[in-house]
Length: 340
Image (tube, rainbow, N blue to C red; front, side, top):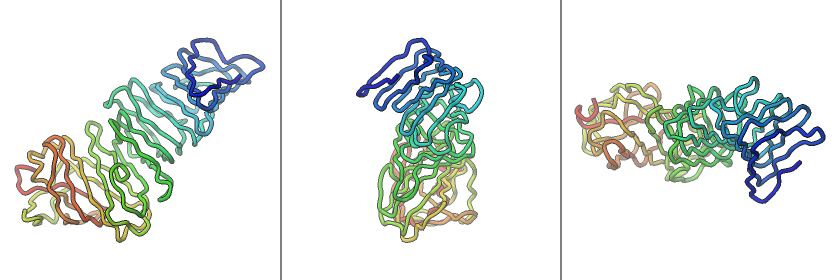
């Protein structure tokens, strides 16, 4: 039996996928809403080529659930989707989840991805009921096509979320009220870029603190860059430095942005670095803040040219033109009252 149609919306309100002579298919352009616990009987298969919206209900039974390439599943169970056991939205005896499918987490509470989410997925969307809710991952995830951070926080727990395949297939990022608490890596092309194409949507559990790299001169080959925001004292090695007529005396003790080249060649590249240190407790005047840079384990120095900061005390925007090094980036100020 096929559920077919042109962008159809079908609600299954009861019963089971259990006719002994039939398998069931949700065809492309069909979105099937599950509104109660739904079994798939022994020797039967529920094939999903379109979209299935599970809400918090289970698809269960002794049959097979098969999410095909480029299909979509909406997951609202707190436990996500799992390989074994009775937890999660899909608890059939056999479960197949394609690496070329799209996975949408839209829970009402904090969620786990569950261990059946493939390490490599075509699409991943974070759309939790509240921007403060969390989606916990417990292994590295690579998104090859589309990462959509609509609402919530991905808690990566020292694991890595990567977007793209290479410097040709960069993947697509959408971001509104979602971000990653942890490390995010993305491919940057050997070309100039601006806006979201250079955004690293990272922060801490309670605050979004992204960094943006906008290349004004293309690097040799580009490559994979990893960004992590770290809440720790950076130390003051290398300071005092004079920058744009101001003596920078101290580095922020709140944290810094650790930027790393995973692979590729970024020589000859020149970029504008933009930092959004939202809700930084030691910023009392955004106009006094400068960006500073250091190589791993080195002393703070200057890279590029200072650009006056904008924004507010709680949501400042700090940037610097003409940067050439992808390294640690921190904040500094002209006096001790602004940054302890």
